[in-house]
Length: 303
Image 1 (cartoon, rainbow, N blue to C red):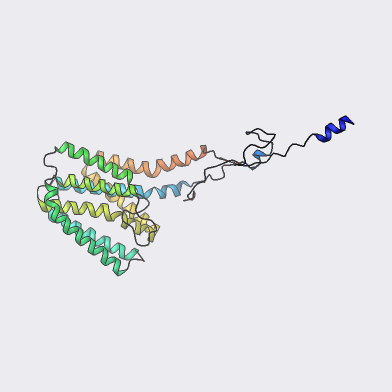
Image 2 (image 1 turned 45 degrees about the vertical axis):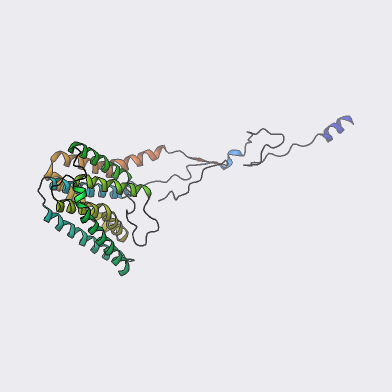
């Protein structure tokens, strides 16, 4: 009878439950788990199998913009060597401006007349202000040695390439949902300062105005034009990119053979080697999901 009383009076321990913020459960340690704890464990649930051709296509905008910056440096070099005079530079500026507006009109569906007039008005104010400030740019670095100017210019161009937004545009395109990022604005400012340093080495006011107009047209509007072309037709984007690479490599080859080899190696590295590395390191990706607190991704991993 005493044994029965003893057995009946002993309480049954409560069943252990998986709780995230319930505190300690009576009768169990804080780190207690049972055999059902790992039943919900999933391995590599969010790992995306990437295709090397798709990764190579996604790397093309990087090579495209590398070629654009290389062409800008080529024009700087030819101008400083007096191969390009101010009249040739002004003709090049007008050609680039007209071609850019033509591409925007042909590729952008949401480009209204009001927006086009707004662009033209802003560019008119921009060109006028640039012409007025040209004498200041010409004398801005007169007390600085040319070696220091080139060192700062190269550093600013490296910063520009490192912070540039290769997936979007420096200027907000018509219909775009997001504004340019902070890093892309810093990148643009670095390119403007680099252009000012190069322009300060030129002998005349018209030279300074022409090279500054060329540089800012490229750094400001080239990303917008390439963004609109890519959004309009990806096939046209590929054709334009490969044509730009061929033209850039041809001009660099005529300027210097070693620079041609370096640029070609850089393009191969960006378009072939880096995508291959990305595919190979996916084999070592190991992800575990389970019934514990996890940091959730705030973006679509398939992008």
